Picture (cartoon, rainbow, N blue to C red):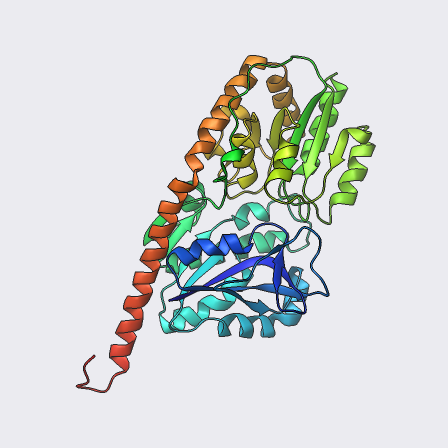
Length: 406
């Protein structure tokens, strides 16, 4: 059986037909579905380019193909192309396919009406919370409050209609977007490579300079890099010397660089850009004394789990699945640079606390081992496959002339 997976991520395609991705969504990611399904068809936005950017990874390949949705960025481009997007997305799904909608997603919304008309079962993988994505400060758009209401409402409907749901959180997203049918959880993080894990760190120095690291896209301000820069500036004013390393890239990078200069941090804020998974990102994490993710919106942050595997003490905000990873004393409210600065000072000036946080990080990261996550994934895929097969057989029987037998 083929499985169709819709995803909001953007890809690029070269003239030879190969599809490329900078990070998540490489062929190894889609191969997870092949443990149960015969093939995968990915429904996503694909931009045609003359050549793949350096460092990007092949996304299609053996038993993995793409149904290229007309490329758009943002709501206005979507409106201009909406008819073609809906037609392409709906046409990518056949009545013999299993269907998984990775949500929240505009593309998923183009597919779901057809599934509802057919009464065809589908699963959802809930990876992000639009209620937080469109919170104040995360997105700069005049229609942000409407988008927050609309997309959260739409996601609740998709989850309510799904025959099965897999959430990246253990309980956070489930509370806001419940599925009345089969439900499970597993993260997309991949720390199966044995080189990810380090032993917990021993107590370290009490004086700076200290290095903080944060990982995430700068395309929007979901990860609150602006809040971290402001908090680092407050720490500097109080005499705590910090360096901040950002791994990630996007349209807000120039203004964040200007913000760091304006706050007097100068060369002490370093933007590494987008880094490939594996060795390069581990090298940046290992330069730091602590990992900080003061997000305004989260599902379950893979980057934090990776930092935990590297034995980094972690500080985060109280959104999404972060409270499933960190104890309350290591979190701050989102969007509060003063509270974040205070928490950073508390942690960095207490070597024993940092050692305890490091031990917690390693212990928690091991709960996300591939062996544990794979068991849940396989069970989810098998459940959806069985439901789809039963629906297909029932439809075949219904379509047969009276008296015909299978």
